[in-house]
Image 1 (cartoon, rainbow, N blue to C red):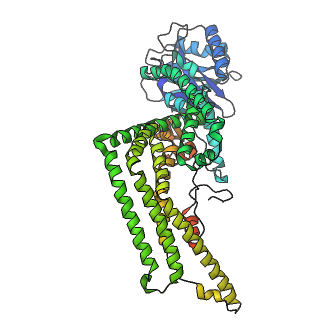
Image 2 (image 1 turned 180 degrees about the vertical axis):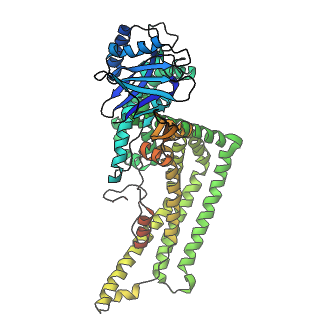
Image 3 (image 1 turned 45 degrees about the vertical axis):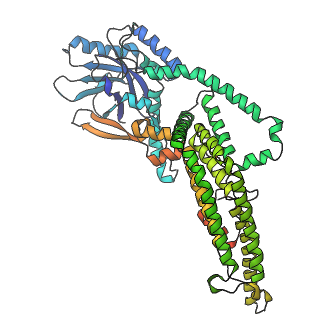
Length: 549
């Protein structure tokens, strides 16, 4: 069987010593973690390794010897390195030496039973210890039978990745420590750290405590009985602003929780939520600063009334045209007059309501702009609710027209059934042409609100931290590895370089996407067009008993 030795590239220049790591007997492979160089006492090395095993729960042992040929190679040193195999008693005993005037390395195994050295069938794999330790290996997303072989390879790689990732305690010692054992690994020149990160960690503790207190206070207020009196729960369940605020409160509770993440998925979820909240609030503050600059809110309030008057005038002209002879068609005049006046009265009520609220519009917009400090998504949800309230008359027109149109469709279907049965029905005399103008208005409102909700869902569900991590440090999210041949020579071990394949952006979004919550129905375009064609109602919120796509 081929012996695979995973050797950290950071140890290629280490001084002579012994190799410590993990032996994976199922795969006949050895994962080298560090080099303990001379001088050392074997008893102290064994005690240190036993302490590491208690912390990491990984069987770390001495696997072999390492000889660096930069110094003069003495026969006594070679014999001493071979004799170490009897002290630490590991089989097979791996001997790796770096030749002085050659780019090839020598690698052999010593079997104690036969007391012979073998130099064939050995593959020496170099890996970047820092990247492997910080990386998270993702299993294949495709579960088809053709990926069974890939899943098996991924499980073998996972053992190697887990060995390096769980050996953090081993990498916390550097050459400046006063301990009796000197190690060479990726952090042997100094433990990697950042002053800014450490300060943020220290500041996060009181910040999380304050946030937890505020959240508990807010939750206690929301659970009071006076806030559960009808129709307040009904309104809160239908307004997207309340849904978004509740969604953000859940996110804040996840971030401020003192419970440690159990796995990589939970850790990435917390990080994605934190970055999403941070970017959301930053965009909201930018929007708020833009609105309050150069009196843009006043200009927006002054523009709203003329726009509402223009929309009302266009609707009145459309109704007057339908009440006459549209496109030269002779309609039922009595029915046209009743429906036309009915809709005109709705327009009159709506425009009167807008003019009545005109003195307060600027103040309302001022507070709406101030709410942007809670996040861009909150401001967009408030905008969506305002659009829903301002276009409520259009929804009323749509409901009346859709009901009448649905009756016509049922009448036509009944007529078709009667026609196939060769029967005459007087309903045919009352079937008129149908105009889709109200459906077009409703569809326009649905499209505008859909775009707003799509932007809100995009900000809420997009794993921004994972995408930024994939862009800046692609090795942190690993989909697998690839091997590049460095040297291959007869009589020498095959030397490979292991490189990490990053996870694709689509897989990042699919794996770490955050769940979304909305009070609006999630219908597909096919379902919307089908409902418009058959005259079924499109509800502006989730309706009980309605099947969602």
